[in-house]
Image (cartoon, rainbow, N blue to C red; front, top):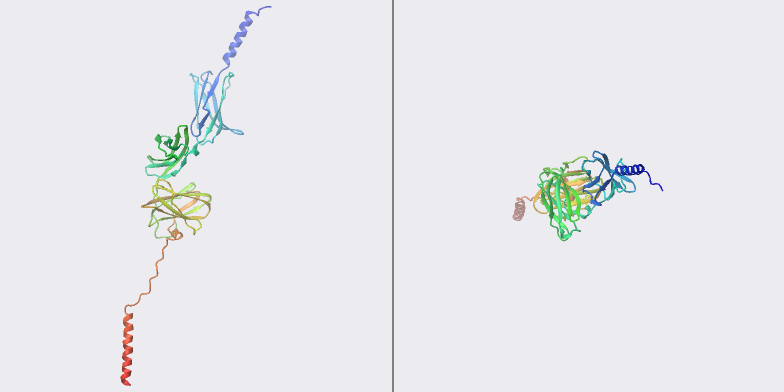
Amino acid sequence: MMNPPRALILIIALTALCGAVTAYQLVLDAPEEIQVGMPLIVTGTTNLPAGTSTEMTFSLVEYTQTLINTQPVTIQGEKDFKVKFDTAGLKKGTYKVEIKSSRELSSDSRTIKVVQLIDRSDEIQLTSSQKQDFTGSLIIAGSAPRNGAAGIQIQVSDENGDTVFGPEYVTTTKEGAFSKKITIPSPGLYDVAFSDAKGLVGTFQFTSVRITTVAPTVTSITPVETEIIPGDETVAATSFASREKPAYFSVTTRKGPVKIFTSTGMDWVVEYSVDGITVLKVNDRGTTSAEQVTIDGNGETVHVKVYPYYGEGNVTLYADNVDKILINAGASSVFGDTRSTPTPAPTKSPLAPLTIIGGVLVSAGIAAWHSRRA
C-alpha cells in the first residue's frame, strides 16, 4: 500500500487550519428572568476581528414575534461587549435577544438568548394618592402583604433620574403595611421603586402639584369655574373649607368610570349626590390618604360637599374622566344646608291694651249717664 505523498498531507493540514481560523465564535449571555422595569443587560464574548459591526435585536415572542428595540454592536479590541435594553412599560412574557453575524460561526456559538419578564407590581397596594399637593414632602403609604413584617425598600427618583431618597428599607407591619414621608425639593414627577429580597417589586409614578388657591364664593349661587385643564385626564379645583363653611363643588362627568378624590393633609369628609336627592357620605381615610369616590358616569352632574373632620384649610378636589369641576355654593341646597330666614311673627302694638281699657271705661261712662237720665 502506497503512503500518500507528503505534499498532499500538507495541503489537507493547511485546509483544516484555514477552516478552523475562519470559524468564529460568538456567545451571548443574559439573565433567564428579570422584573419589568429593570434594565436588561446582555453581555457577549467573541473572537471576531476588532471593528466588526453588527446589531442586536430585542423582541417579544408570542404567537408572532414583535420587535421591541435594536441596538448596534461594534467589537472592540478586548472582544467583550455589553448591550442594555430598557424594559420599562413592557408587559410580562417571553422575550428574546438575538445578534446577527455576517461571518461563519462555530457550532458552539450562541447568538440567541431567551428572557422571561416578570411583573410583581400587583404585590404592592398603594393607599396614598399618586397625585398630591406640593408641601415639600411626598407621602408614600400602602401595603405589601406577601412581605409581611420583612420590610420594603423604597427609592425615589425625580424626572431627571436623580435619586432624592434611598434606597432604604422602611418598616412594615405583620400585614405588610408601610408609610413614609419623603422630603422632595419641588413639584413634579417622581418614580418610586419598591424592592425586597427577591429584587424589584414594581415602580409607581407620583405627581406633586403646586397648590392653586381660589377664593371661595359665598354670596353668589352662580357656579364659578376654576383651574380646568383642557385635554388633561385629571382636573382640579381648590376652595377653603371648615365644618361651619364647607366647600361645595359640581362635577360634570363623562361616560364611563369616574374617580373623584380629595387632596391629603387633613381628615376630609366627603358628601356627594348623583341624582340631586340622595346624599352619600365617605370618611374612611385619615390625614395621609385621599378620600375617594368612584361612580359610573353618564354625563350627569355630581354635587360634592367637602369639610374637615376638625380644623379648617384649603381642599383640592380632583377628578378623572370628567369635563370640568365648578366651585358651586348653590349646591348647598342639595345637602339641605340652605337655611331660610324665618318669617317674623306679627308685632302687637303696645297701645292695644290701653285702647281696650279705654273702650271699657267709655262704655261704662255711657251706661252710667243713661242710668241718671232714667
